[in-house]
Amino acid sequence: MASMSMLTSPIFSRPSPTAGDAIFLRRNNPISSIPCFTYNNGRPFLLPKSSPFTAVISCTAAPKGGRIRPEYIPNRISDPNYVRIFDTTLRDGEQSPGATMTSKEKLDIARQLAKLGVDIIEAGFPAASKDDLEAVKSIAKEVGNAVDENGYVPVICGLARCNKKDIDSSWEAVQYAKRPRIHTFIATSEIHMKYKLKKTKEEVIETARSMVMYARSLGCDDVEFSPEDAGRSEREFLYQILGEVIKAGATTLNIPDTVGYNLPSEFGQLIADIKANTPGIENVIISTHCQNDLGLSTANTLSGAYAGARQLEVTINGIGERAGNASLEEVVMAIKCRGDQILGGLYTGITEQHIVMTSKMVEEYSGLHLQPHKAIVGANAFAHESGIHQDGMLKHKNTYEIISPEDIGLHRSNESGIVLGKLSGRHAFKSRLSELGYDIDGKELDDLFWRFKDVAEKKKVITDEDLMALVSDVVYQTEVVWKLGDVQVTCGTLDLPMATVRLIDADGEEHIACANGTGPVDSSYKAVDLIVKQSATLLEYSLNAVTEGIDAIATTRVLIRGESVRKATHASGETLDRTFSGTGAGMDIVVSSVRAYVNALNKMLSFNTISSTDKKVNTKSSRVST
Ligand code: KIV
Image 1 (cartoon, rainbow, N blue to C red):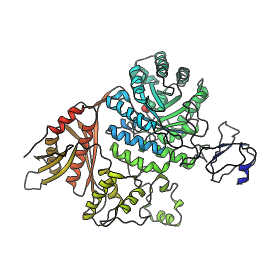
Image 2 (cartoon, rainbow, N blue to C red; image 1 turned 180 degrees about the vertical axis):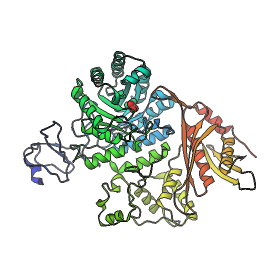
Image 3 (spheres, protein in one colour; image 1 turned 120 degrees about the vertical axis):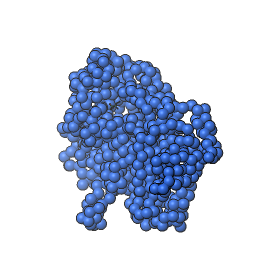
Image 4 (cartoon, rainbow, N blue to C red; image 1 turned 45 degrees about the horizontal axis):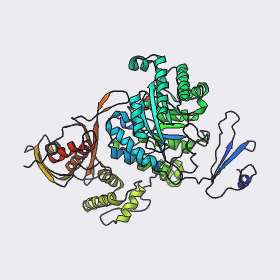
């Protein structure tokens, strides 16, 4: 074990570090030029006596996450062990079927991603629609300018195909950020070039080269280029096109395994080969973008990092096209747990304690629910069921846990001993919420507290699952265009099911309608339709009891497709119908179902592809009385 006296060795540029300094010792690896050991102030380390080492003292106070984040320079990272985290939840993640998010939801997520400390936020694909452009612009203006006390502010990035129109839209949206980035891409695999692009290799190179130059000519000094389907592209062609875009001014080269086809050793080799053979590669950052079609996205991403990639593209909860993308929480926690021992000392700037809250927010806003056994953030990720495991846990937590839940912002049930019921006060309520990873204040906390009191009147003990259902019902809701007042149903074997629904519009006016249907939920939805007057097709409906017993809270999730013009251009060029998700919770399953449907309609109505005057007509022209 090295002693502290080493830290006062003359090798340092200052005699002794002071509190708050971050200290890095690097043992220089004789095999590769990558330093293979990094140490930070205050933690023990092993350093073989014979190892030559260099030391760097940085006088910047380390942020909460521990080590310092190097100053942002688009094409260079001063610490070779630092890995940038590029979050594409709002772009690739939103491309998941049903994950459409409103501008307000995207802004909330972007704020949360900045709290988490991601280096780059890919805020969207501005050419997809006017709404997408406006959403990216508002993120660039607000989140892209919120510089914290350590000088951190995330880069705000917009995706663009390799054409002037897309690049103009991207620049129009991101230019307001302190650190704007344009990310442009074109396919480079045989199959994509021949069937999709119908372009020769030479034409693809020329398009890529000229569009990177065009992006730079707009004044953007941070340009990322992706050869789409790199995982299936010919190596020599990749070296050639990447070399050309470096000359044209690209600062990051992202290597996508677009169809999740590569195996980890193969993807790592691809990164290593690109690093070894691309002219000018030492002047840019190499990045990974791994889709999850074979369930290998996290493994491939880590393999890419080990081979030299210093930007990793990921999404919260691993959402994304088809089977999704590499998940931020898995990649970041793998680097956190094994970065020193196995990955040559890699580290990120993520504040892991915000992972749970971010995951929950994305789960609610995207409507994409986590499997219970999802690594890191699934409901069972820290549950120990078998007797042997429980026994081990009681003796020593590390017997079956490699990560403490507290490290990602999750506090174990009963740790504080708080049992919530109808007599619980606001303070106990807020404490339990924050132990569960929710950082809720102000009006949201008030609304949630009153809803909690309402449920606690009917239910003796409010469990964590009940609380999470209420948070999702009260806090993670879109702008309220319509609010549920009351719902009354008659149903059973004797009569035709009938529902009466009272909705309240944004101006506080009440609207009532009655309808018959095949059951109580169908009748209620028809009554809602009579009031809202917006045609929507119900694509999915699911109902779950979140706790055991007859007094369980039921949560409902629905997915709807609007029948008017809410379309978007996908990054592939296709035009897609948008779908909208909604959730609701309540002790009555019909009430929970109507809440979910109204929430999905609200999301659809607040989506900016209809003008605000249309919106007004939609809420005002629908008075129906019976
Ligand atoms: O999967 C992919 O290839 C992409 C690129 C646009 C980076 O999403």
